[in-house]
Every structure is written in C-alpha cells, then in structure tokens.
Amino acid sequence: MAARQEVSAWRPRVPGVTEVFHARFTEYAYPMHVHDAWTLLIVDDGAVRYDLDRHEHGTPHDTVTLLPPHVPHNGSPATPDGFRKRVVYLDGSRLGDELIGPAVDTPDLRDPVLRRRVGQLHAALVRSGDELEAESRLTLVGERLRDHLQRRTDPPRHRPDPVLGRRLRELLDARVVEGVSLQEAARALHAHPAHLVRAFSGAYGIAPHQYLMSRRVGRARRLLLDGLAPGEVASAAGFYDQAHLTRHFKKLVGVTPGRYRVSSR
Image (cartoon, rainbow, N blue to C red; front, top):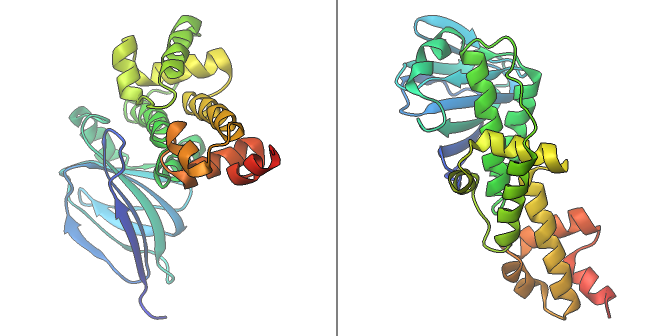
C-alpha cells in the first residue's frame, strides 16, 4: 500500500483554540517532540501508539487523548492502514498548568460522552460562522476534561438559574445580527461560560447558539418576504456568508432561501 498523507489545518475564531488539525497518515511516524499547547486528540479510523513520559500508550477510536504541553511524546500508526485523526490545540486559558501532572498520568480517557462532545466540537469548528456553537461546545468539553483530571467521581450538580438564562436571552436578542461570543457574554453577565450555557439550556430547552440561529433565520425570512435577495439577506441577518445562511435556513425551514423567496410571490 502506498504511503498516504492528507492534512488540513486552520485557526478558527474561537478563544483558546490555537489550531485545528485533521490528518490521515498511513506510514508517517512522529519523532519525539513537544507542543506549547494542550493537544486534544480523537482517532476516527485506525489507532496511534505513542510514548509519553517513558510510558507507551494507545488511542483506539473510543478514547479521547489529552497530551499536556511541554511534555515530549511521539506517535506512529498502530494498524497497517494507518490512522485518521482530528486534533484541537488549546492554550492555557482552557486548561491550566496544574493539570499537566494528572494528564501525564492518564492521557487516554474512555468516556463516551466526552468522545461525542469532542466530535460535535470538530463539526462546529469546520463551519465558518458557527463560532458561538464551537465556543459553547468547547466550554463543556473543557469542564468534563477538568472533572477527569481532578478525579471527580461524581460530577458537580448544576442548579437551575432561570434569571441568568433570561439575562443571556436578552443579550442575544439585542445582538442578533452582530452576535456575541461566549466569553463576551460571560464578562457582561459576570458568570462562568459553562454556567451560562447550562443556565440558558435549562431555562429554555435550547442551547444559546441554537437560539441565536433561530432568531437570525426568523429575521432572514422577513427580509426575504420583503423582496431582498439571499446574498443581501445573509449579511443583514447576521450570517457569515450566503452558504452559512443557506445551511441554517434549510435546516430550520426545510427549503433554501432562494426557493422560499420565490414561493412568497
């Protein structure tokens, strides 16, 4: 089998994320090296074997691997067909240095909920314009990682906070077009980002990013009925571009903006 390499790398507009890296390798082996960021890794096909702190580890597809900064490690395919992986590199604002030791001791985490959430995070990271969703999902991923590394056997209870949920809804309503990041909302409302997401979801049964997109689609519908073209509507309703509008509009309305506009005639 010929050696195969496929890579894609970018820096999204999400606080705390220094790089996203998707790759498929069949024969390439990483030599010993270090990163200055946290490496959050999932493997979709195949498996990787690696050494960290003089101990051998592996990454079957049902695990989440978290490699701490400044600690040497390598990596090579553990199966004949190589591996396909997705990586998010996180700076110290997401995970502190006090967690480096626990991460060295237990870098591979078998947690189906965490694995699913990391996959959802990557799905949001590849879509321009969905930064609020990516930031919200990353916040919950970080919270669960800290629970693992701090050896919390019982996850902390989260009490309902309808007042905070309402205040976030009011902020989203005031910023439908220009949007607001989760970090901005947390500073404005003096609340932890994870608590904000849980308070809003608990109060309204919908995540903040889903609520914001629903409001934007509602605005887009009105503008389309006013006769504006989809390209004009996209920016006027707060979408990244026309493709971003089309994706969310069709998801919520069932047809494309263009077809919706024609049907209104």
